[in-house]
Length: 180
Image (tube, one colour):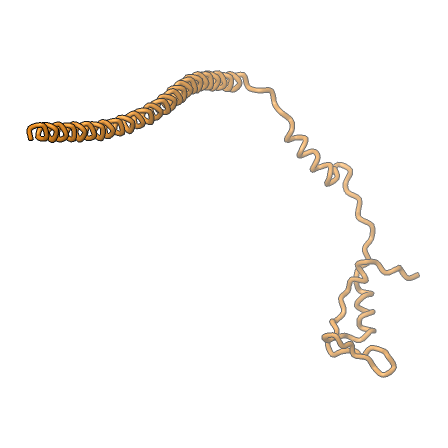
């Protein structure tokens, strides 16, 4: 009785063929290449390979591979009762951290208030600067009006002087004409 070939017995690699061209005879059979052993030698080599049998059962006292992995993980999860001294030290550190956090929070609130006050002062200063720029615009318009008024007064003064001069000349001409 011959056993069916198994995966292990069929995995024997044969010599590779030449690049792209198998060596064929005229009748279509393969021509053995120098690197390839004859068919009889290959069959003999296959018969020498061990045929795998069923896996040997593991001893009953040894757990399976997956069970061992699970045991390692479950052992890692096991926690021991906390040590009271360590717990007290941790609690003291937590209390100290909470106190620092409260101080930092108070400092943060105080600085936030200071920042809000500074921003409010800055906003008020900005409004005052806006009012000052409006006053400067009004002052520049008043100055321009004052300059224009001064020029008009000068022009009016020159006109009055010219009229007075003309009146004096006319009065002098009339007096000369009466005298003559």
